[in-house]
Image 1 (cartoon, rainbow, N blue to C red):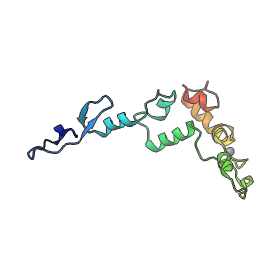
Image 2: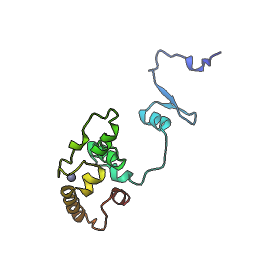
Image 3: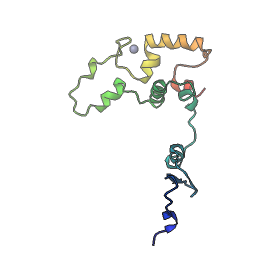
Image 4: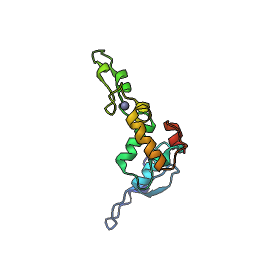
Length: 140
Ligand SMILES: [Zn+2]
């Protein structure tokens, strides 16, 4: 038998969507409350403040998230997807220096052009002691 307590309809009362939280508390529905209930909660990653901060541009934050997780579609990663073996990845090269295929490390540190940009930014940002790798940068 169903619980009839919730079937008390009052035509004078405006309909309202309610949400029962993980703790069993009935509240007025809000997407933020639902999100907090359905998402998997984990500890903050050490680079969270590098990627997400109040003035962050969402597109840049998303790209930074891809970079930190090594998920950019770089040529070294795309060459691993080639299951048919009919693509010539020897023709791929870094668009900044045209020397060899690009990778995360090449795009930001090994490429001569990118490295000169990084060193300029690093010095202006007062990060001269930071080495040429992402782990040192994102764990500041
Ligand atoms: Zn390059």
